Amino acid sequence: MIRLGTKGAEAVNDNGDRKSATVTAKNPRRGRFGEVPDMTAEEHKRRGDAADALFREMKRQIAEKLRKE
Image (cartoon, rainbow, N blue to C red; front, top):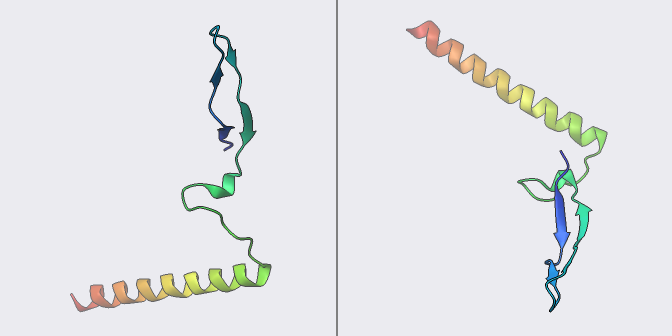
């Protein structure tokens, strides 16, 4: 998704003519969470492995609680 932003406000002359503002495409990585730094492939893999381990542990705890009931 590309968002358009303007640099400066729209200017209006004395005679009512409107001057268009400069429009630039914003970087989509700067969405809700601000600037996101690029990750190396190694860091991406490490974070993915950590997320997988966390999810497996969560599933294990849920299964353990269900077995006790």
